[in-house]
Image 1 (tube, rainbow, N blue to C red):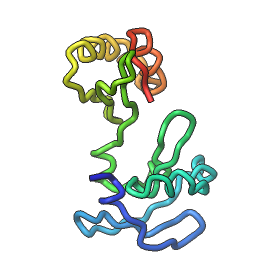
Image 2 (image 1 turned 90 degrees about the horizontal axis):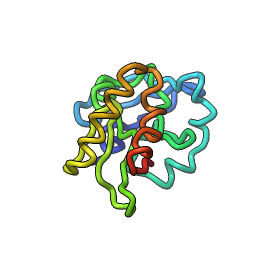
Image 3 (image 1 turned 90 degrees about the vertical axis):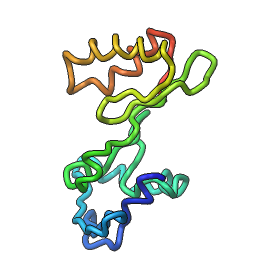
Image 4 (image 1 turned 60 degrees about the vertical axis):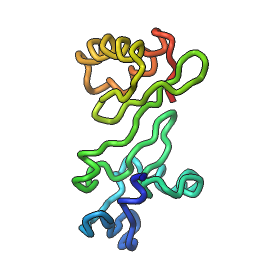
Amino acid sequence: MYMGDYIAIERQIGPFSFLGCSVSTGTRFLARVDADKQELFLDLAWSERHPSACPFLRPSGARIVCTIHETSPAQCKAYRCVIARIYNQEGVERGYVTGTRALHSDDPLLREAWKEVEAEIATDQEEAEDHIPFLLARRGYRCE
């Protein structure tokens, strides 16, 4: 299941305002596209290529961002999407990191490397997501 299976836009009620629905609970919510993400939201190409994704996600550089972060529903705040997929030097996916900065991997080498990365990002939580790819690259991994 993807977040697009749980979050739906019922209708647009303003230029960047929508009535959304948390499909699993039937709970409606008012979503406003964050002012700093309105230009990103207007680009529909990524959403058209990823119809199962949450309709409010958009690419921003190497990351996929939530364009309604300030008004996102409770289930999104608890879930936080994947912020990095991690590949070894052979290009095989070895794990992923969620927005709560939790590593999901069965690879013992990656898990050990992640402990070191966690220690390094603990000092700067604001910039942690931007530092993760660099820190893992130093340990032989690639992030997307």
